[in-house]
Length: 291
Image (cartoon, rainbow, N blue to C red; front, side):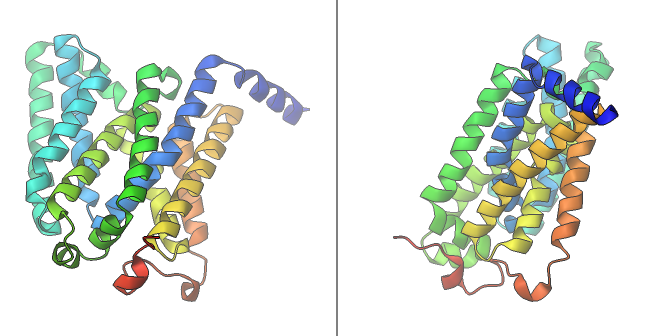
């Protein structure tokens, strides 16, 4: 009887517009954000997402101060920060140092803005925990643009992206515009982190970006297949986790993280001999066909 009631309650919830909008947002996120995760893993730029969380907080604080949409300000701040640190991304070590500096400056500036202006700090920090049922049209537009732009870039510049993720120096010697492409990818990573904040909160954004990519890397045998697996896993995790959260009346963010984490652990049970990565392949095998 309880199962029947639960099913009926879930069916009723799925008829609500905010729930439908949240589900659609997660579906859009599952297309673009896991591909961003592939970039994060491939370029080994894990510190970027932490730094962008702090930059997003600064943007939110500024938005609350000047009366503009806090999430729009967070997006702009992250995009500018991503473009600003791109020249420092000549090596992973150089980027890590830049991210550490950016993280420190952003959180200090955010706290100063909140303290001096008298803006409600709890309101600013609340936005970092996510509010998936408050997703609006602007959030859907951002996620929709990412869902089109990120896979489109991967397909359009698939040879250059594959070379860059395989070996930066080889890509430069092969005529790939390494600096420009790295800058574009960093901006996309920054915007993706900011765009996912409303869905899961900044602290749990890995559920939408990094975890699907980690699982896909265990299953894929080339950049193309890893990207495909990442999107497929993102769709599965987002929709399954969201439905479970609705059914059990639990907060969606943690449920999405746990769902993605369980899947990543399950994928790691796949025998190692069946697993490869574009980083372990010869450059010729890593590159998608140009035909």
